[in-house]
Length: 527
Figure 1 (cartoon, rainbow, N blue to C red):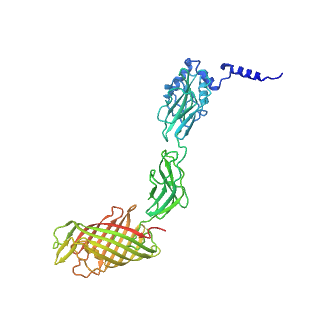
Figure 2: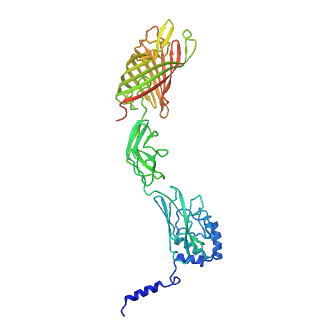
Figure 3: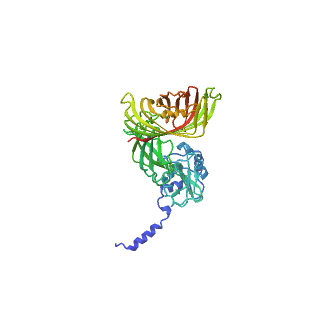
């Protein structure tokens, strides 16, 4: 018998005409048929399950429907009231028939809820084999977080098996569940609860052009800002590791919003390796960039206050030339006592206004600890501006506003030695530098001083705040009007640079206030 093409068309039409009850139902449709007959309320056994489910605790965590299948029954409010946080057991469905239990588990398995966080949304999808069931009314999507109840997101049942949730907050854990409703709005079952959190699709870019610079008692790391990727860049993270190996550690306490960072937590004189990574607005850290190295130099001991030491500006002993400049301004007497023949009243805030601008160049020949002491020879030149003029005639003093501008000079030999974090220094200077001391009180008059003996020490008070003490004793002064002044300068670094001096002479003493700034011109840093 020969097959005719027309018969194929007839056969196809006949197959399409087969009623739905004649084809085999899917497992999901079978479960729904058990739990709901036409549009009537569920049977008594199912109603009992509704009450049990309203008290049950639904599963929490990234559990799959297959590993922890659970179905929610009853109306929407009952399912939404269920608190996540545990695992549903068979005892939770006491009074429910074995057939109803099986149908509930089949529902959860068939729905197979899937979460896909992409970009700035979470795409929720699930199995849709119930769409052909004659009493199928649609799906309800519920969302919550670990501390809140599940709430229905869609006002009308969904006909499709996909939901795009765009109202999500970065780095927040969300719980999702899907429920099946009948044409009459009856909630017939639910999927297992799944959780996820939104992550950006692209991590931040790698910071470019990283650089590291040595600095005194700290290092500085710089880089180029990165462009926006999937989300705006909130800041940067800096990692530090030892150059001899080891994993980098995030050293900044909070996200850095600038494109540079000072690290003052490392060990002085030890070289470290640094890397920088960008952090986006959701707290996602990108890949770290190129490694750069630097180390924190020890604090500079090239000078005390007015006098020099036998060290260069490197913050460590070294052979070679060194140059620096300093600016010192004595504002005058804060408090003092004088001989009654000169003044019977203590001085308070008596202005002096002595300005000293000094250039200092030296050569370090021997260094500590290679030798017992560090040795340096140098020369100083100072421009001195005094905002008053002193005259003395038989104990009678005048103090006018006429300025005195002079130049001072000196050559010196300096010796230094360190003991742990304490530096000890001494030196001898030949020249007129010591004349500056005679301008610090109106009870003294300038003298032809030709040498100054000085000694001092420096030590750390706290990290990155150092203290220096300096004693100056002018020598070679044979003038009868001289009263042999001695001054002790105290200097606390990085404390507004305002300091106190104690000055003593034969017929009185005074506490002086002054400002002091000193900075290295060369070498200016390690090479």
